[in-house]
Length: 77
Image (cartoon, rainbow, N blue to C red):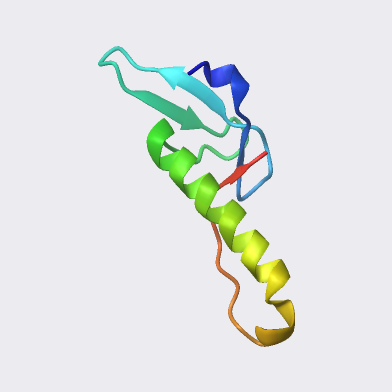
């Protein structure tokens, strides 16, 4: 998959993360603004979880009054 096809943003500062291929074959994402980083795989997983959480939160808003907010480090853009 081409990394340019997807958009992942930092959950802290809403900045689009940069994708970097390391010499060992691992690919990482790094926020150019705050420095938050992780592997591409973990960032994709967390962005997907955030999307699902945001959808459910919106759908269940009337039932979740007073529930604590869940924070994610990476979001789908």
